[in-house]
Length: 309
Length: 180
Image (cartoon, rainbow over all chains, first blue to last red; front, top):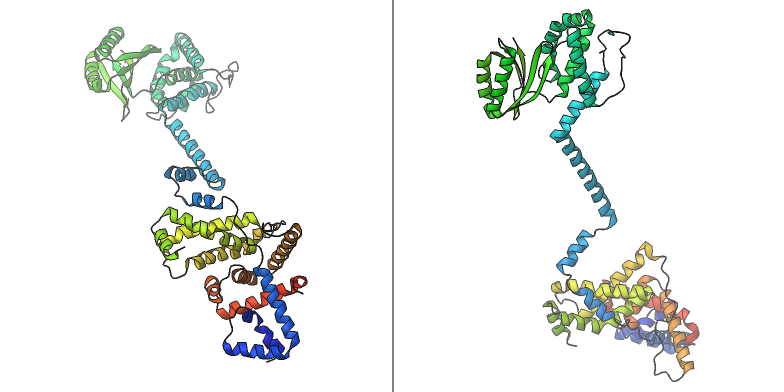
């Protein structure tokens, strides 16, 4: 056995992990090699130093901390840990929640009936007035501004009514034509039946067109109607009174009344379940002709009746 | 301690038995962690994690291994994993001696000599490669046999013997001034 071979066994010799034959071979070599004996002694002292090192002790309170950490976690603590997620998880969830709420708010706003009505009426009343005269119509007179400054909806309504009354008195020659045009265009303004503009007549009577526009803004600023009808009776006033009495009897109400040239237009709100009675009874007052009727009417049914004779 | 009886109680979920287990093995598990990692706070963390993992796995503990070798296996694996983690490179080892000199030392000079020797041994062990260090710790400081070390580290006994021999040669070279 060489010195190298013997020294390879020194560690196992110290641990008494050699077989009897290996141990005999090593001791045989050591008996003849002083250098290897010194080497073995140094190895034995090294091992003794390491084994003699001061034992390590766990810090005070270690057992209590371990035992406490091993106890089952109560359900409410687990729930709290679930709720209190770390930021990398919480932040995207929060952002998604904000977007969801914002989306719902937009949907609710657009779906609100009041908001829809507001969006429908006010811009039209303003835009009709502001767009006078329309692009397809030549300017009526140089004195009339093409685009008046913006005004509020009530102001537009009052101005329209005043213009309407004045023009009705003044422009007697064109009144009948205005009436016809109003009848044709009023339904269009209520989104019931689209009416094609009569460019020829507008070109021939620009004043009449102005009047029509004013009247249309008036009718548009009123609530949307479900039914447009014409009631021809021998005496218009008698017919109007009878119509008012009929409306009251059917638990309805007159919501607006205005002149359209020589004719009278009355807007009524009739309970939906009494609408059939209204049509039948109104037919007895005079010749009733329903011009337009919205398929799905609300409650009450809003009826615009043009009284004529 | 009757290990079999303790294991039986542990498997039944006896919390008091777990406390007894921690009391019985706390110093050994902590010692392995401290010798391997060289940092007391980190060693306590690893030691605590060792017992908590054992606690969770106790219902499945079949008793194929001895309880103490099972604990050493968990602790050794946690230590080696921690040493292999990249974020540990910045951690600094404790400078103070691992433990104060024992009270039965005859004099202050002897206590200082003891502390110096402990520090030298600690530094020599800490300088060993990790796979040799764990073998020396388990053999010379914890007293496990070659077979038990092989079981703990999942190594063949010949590999254990070879690594231990290389480790002791390194230690002999570093501690030469104390062995002459």
